[in-house]
Length: 297
Image (cartoon, rainbow, N blue to C red; front, side, top):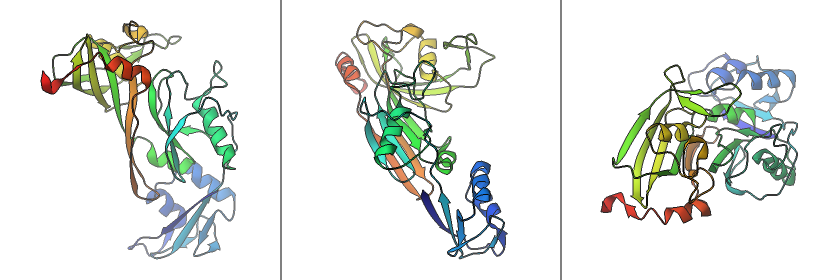
């Protein structure tokens, strides 16, 4: 169980606890429903209360968020490095080839299974809540919230920075791709740029080029499925190894895409967290061919 303590801020003389939690602290309706159903999950100045109790500046609110019922099968293998962990989040450095979520095709070998095993070791029962998602063959950092309030607080507020290696040598030093994306067909995973698609914006910066490849740093304004892969293919520079979107498999057998940095604030502790993860071995090997940094051009 996660216990979170707050002191009611100055300026509030008589406000219902539920209104303060939702309107000021951003608690979701789902979490509020849990607090309503179970007496004792909310205390005010050490006394169990219902969520409609009135509070004022200086009052001490304690929220007890119970553990969930674990839904994923615990599976320790393969091992996945933990880049960061606190009481509210855990950040995994996911290898390529691993799905994030379980599905009909992947009941085992997912990051959800690894998370369940990690919780089991710690004596916790938590639902897997990935705040950012990566494709199965994309490597890098995945932020997992340990409870519903953490997931809500982080939604849409994680800065993600990607490293990619594209086929071809991009001459411009930087650029932006602003092109809507949609699914090609309901039964297919492939996406395309289309005027009737969802708004999507990708920013890229060239770090190095050479050997027929370009090393890129990318950030996103939106988070569409396959966004980087679709946008780079759209401008004529598909990612190396990305056969779905026209990338060459000559030097790498999966899309050369890695989420190498995430930055976010844990709004419960007000701690700013900045995590980085090195490239996987296959991308590091390919990087040796990209031998001309843009500063030397």
